[in-house]
Length: 325
Image 1: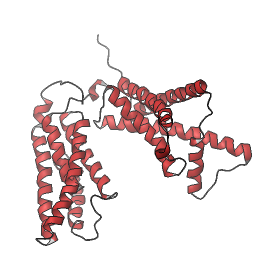
Image 2: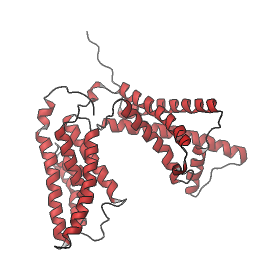
Image 3: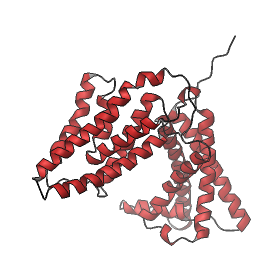
Image 4: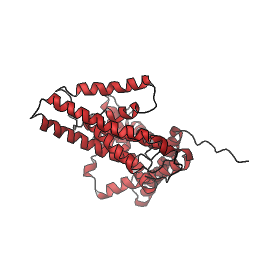
């Protein structure tokens, strides 16, 4: 009698396990480097905690050695929290279909863990990574790469077979790029278009369309933020990659390459749409140029999502396909 496969936990549980193992490996590599070079422990984690607390207008209680020990402990705890959070984030991304394989997954996971520690240091003024030497970068990158290798290995080992994804087809990549271009023009379309063409209920679709309608109206306002600004462009990239992941999920495909294509399409759509508005506004009223752009964006989103919906059933009946990027 065949045994029933054991469940391998939720995405949260797998992420916590991966983060815990990765954090342990990172600590081991760091302490091995300290033993090899005879260098002291880094004060950066404690400095980040102190700077973060001061940024809130408070201070770490205690004096002298007691306060220093408390900062050291809080710094270590913050590192553990960052490692666990990284594991959960990467696990959630894999669950959403962003599945890197082999060395690529280890490198990406390590880079995320590295950003989780380095970005707060830069933001709080504890250290400026732009001034680091090559040796500083190596000392920082190697332990985080070890984290990435360990965490990625745990995630792959714990991942159920049912979660595997097929390689993205050329058609899916093209549709993702088109959806990205639509999101670059109208940010809400990246998430709204897949929702409207899914099997969701009528009520859910009505709620999903409201943000798109609101954006179409707000876009005509002179006070609307620039789409290529630090505030406007990230939202378009997030919407585009989220939409690409939704399209990939329809076909049971790996979302890595579609998401890259969507991000590229969103960048092109944002800058291309801005160029169109500037060119057209010198010839016709701006609202007319905006309406043309609305039509193009909606048309691109429809082409991306309706075509994928029609091919969904066929792709699910094809059976197993090679797993990869």
